[in-house]
Length: 256
Length: 321
Image (cartoon, rainbow over all chains, first blue to last red; front, side, top):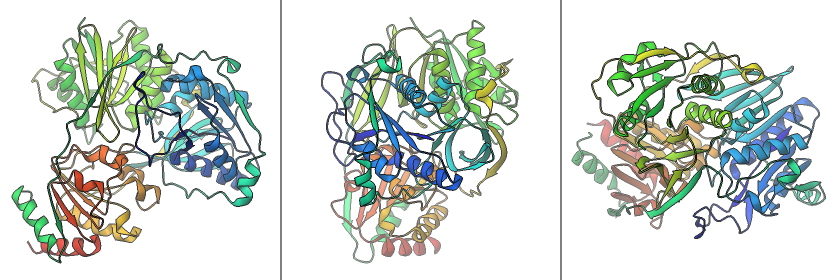
């Protein structure tokens, strides 16, 4: 089983655009995207339920940062491949999908490839489905729950109106939504063990993928502007009757 | 170059086009050129409504027979494009099916995708889309380069839907080709969750709850208030991640973007991630214990108080009306 993870700038810190490229600065310390911790947890649970198997992780970064991947290894993943290459800076979602797909093949493929639905910093939200197409695999996106039954996956897939039950043969790609499992905290033992787990770093060229970087992604950022700011209104401290303020406000809008 | 040929990924709910579909058709019409709707499913029953909003042609795959829309829709689109009818631009709604179809299609066409947009313009020879980032404080405009079709997804309520009054779109069959291994996933059962009120991204009033509610059971207060106001209930990412409510209720950068007339944030501090999903609301009311919470910076009415005290009183006052 392979889980795709992304290492992102700490979301608690304010984001910043690189002045020369107008893309998100990702050169500081990177952490495991919380959205991906659900995928890692899901894979670990499925391996436990199957009574065997191994969870590997793949990730891509323009630098050699691995601290986020170590977190996934500390949770219980066995090994990882980081595709690290300065030429990957500025890659779009399609290039990312091609690179990650090649990385899964370097690991020998998998019965199941799991990813989050979208990253917390770029949130394009297309990479898992694009990977499936690159690999020629079936896919189930926006999974709320995943079980393995015989050789097939049984997935409950989130929809606008509720959910669909979906069966899917393996190998396959599944993207999981946030909050569906409780990601485990790495134990001290896990953190120590993660330091010696195999983590290969490869380049895009090693995988036979030609990254297109800034110039060739069929898109270029032409303008960055500040949005008009929204003004703060009245703020009142509740003295036991603030709910009446809300009622009056709603009355003023004629919605009640 | 104006755009000579635009497709809109069209969806139906309860026998009518979704509001997001009509919004995109209206915008497509304003860009000039021929507008087509592409329905992944049976397009015939909604061809009249799609035509009224600007679709002269309605591509229809017909029933998917349990296939997932992403791979089926993209394959059907690719077949029409290979048949010589390539559009310059395909507009998708930013939702589950829209994202899946555009993702599969981007690989088939080897073209990039730009998602989470709120606007599109044609500037001379360049098609440009606008995306809010950093909680909507910054607007990034991206120009497509190279040859089309350009693939772009737009957030709901980015455009106002207005009927153009044209006749029903001409239905053209766009059957799904053999999907091979990629079509292995099959829907075996459909579950519709009981929802009495309006949809979250279409509701006139949205009441959302966050970490300040303290525990999952207290989300009932948010639900009750939403019902009383005939609105929809939403949630911050924090309580979705905590498993209190499903992902489908999440308002924010990852999740749904809402633009209701009134947005009531209960126990939500206003993380950037959340603000991007609700800052476009016409009127915002925030109830939070922490006077320093960023949510108060965007609220028209801010109540510094405990949601456990304010909400029950508010509910009681509204019930008495």
